[in-house]
Length: 155
Image (cartoon, rainbow, N blue to C red; front, side):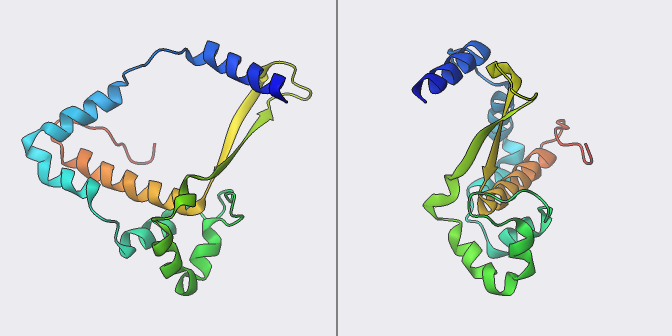
């Protein structure tokens, strides 16, 4: 098992490198957030998440997406929202949100090399819901930033 772990680490170090990379998206976000024209919109990023936002985000996630480690997909939560809504809202501060299962899927049968595997992660459905809330908030910030066309619908 240790041999496999070392091979995976070596492969990813060669593929991704070990130096720190400054992403242009982060630089763009920093520029946008320091512009005085969007400072009021920036405050929404750090605001507490409301139950309405959580419900809206959960209902925007397609019900047929794969379930996370908890075994549930969004269809389950949406179908019995009257029962699960308060629990989902309360769970948004839980520590298990970061839990996910990651596995390697072979691209071809009996793949002998690491480059012939693809990693896939199954994230917790509540994590997906919070990710949706944050992405909608970031979208609002960018849409209010004049001169930048970052989000294109239906892409």
